[in-house]
Image 1: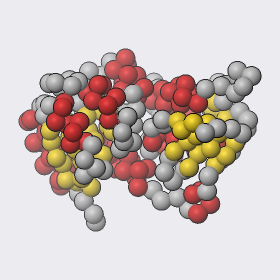
Image 2: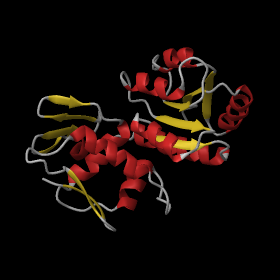
Image 3: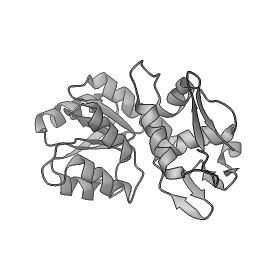
Image 4: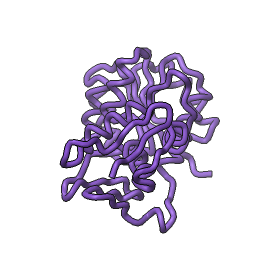
Length: 229
């Protein structure tokens, strides 16, 4: 099995050492950086397949680092922070994090989340899925996870693009929330889990509305989401 290389940007050196041992036993190679500027530079080298990012960092904080990172790459990012309040999760997801875990976390859950991120990132679509998806003025390349509205490229995160791909494959049809979460986030939603809703909120904002101000993605209470043609 190929070892997945993960970059952890966290100033807690004891935690980094602990997770390096744990992830190593699970088939990962973990590199650790302990401050923001160095972490951003290392994250942009292309050496790693995913990033574990702390919020509280010396130098550039985690949110500013993520903002800078998303201007240049869509590498999967899992935020891991002791600041587990909803506002911190919301900010992280709005800026393009693909997942969020609060400290302290169970290392087994971290491993499961990382594997889900990597599966989604490395998944090779079939020839049918690889063709451009086009609905109205919107086009999506589901392999490279790039979307355009007319000729304008939209800065979607990997997670947002995967959600959009599922919706565009069945325009006008309801996709239930659990299906979206399992297919894209790699997990079933708990009763208070709003992570999917946050990703869709960000996606709606980036897509804009139809010419007549109709929302492109509509929520059907108790059912799911639909891409309105």
